[in-house]
Image (cartoon, rainbow, N blue to C red; front, top):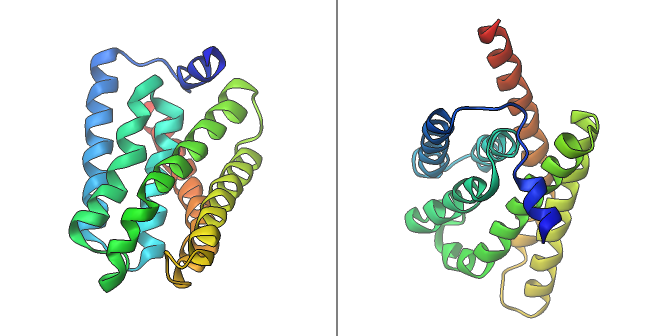
Length: 182
């Protein structure tokens, strides 16, 4: 548990607490609003949400990653934006989506910030772990006739694509931040 806490407390730069909290508020608001304002296409929504998850991994310490891990799927359930009439099925997946998002954030922090692994290698490993976890859960729930089969694509290939695309967007955002700071 100490190792998990130590990993979560790493950031790519030190920020004054007040500014970190402002950034957290803005990121959380945007991550919650994206599924409400841009429900479709899922590739766009997922890419933007995953970009903010990667930014959270790079910028926030400890528990501060949790709003970004949880809020987008809560917004999707509240607005019924992901699967139309099948949105109720998202309730079964929501805790696993939270865990999948946490896997993405934690592995990204662990590999990139703690171990100094190349950004793109870290992104690939983290995205693959998130997608594999969500696909495995969906596979089990589809096999148990709890979820419709459409969840296999949504929780597999789509998750992998949006996590990688989101990581690329986050990389661009960091590059833009660095250019503005210099």
